[in-house]
Length: 50
Image (cartoon, rainbow, N blue to C red):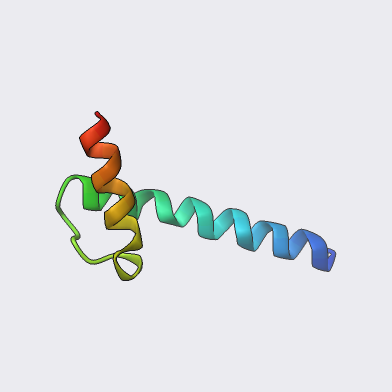
């Protein structure tokens, strides 16, 4: 019974929040391969800035 717009919004929110654990994993070197390497690049930059 959810409008299509709401469904899409929830999917986007879900996927973006799903990326957070991946970034945390790659930052702590537990999972070096996530999101085709895109997350690793971001995480490495964040780690260097820290």
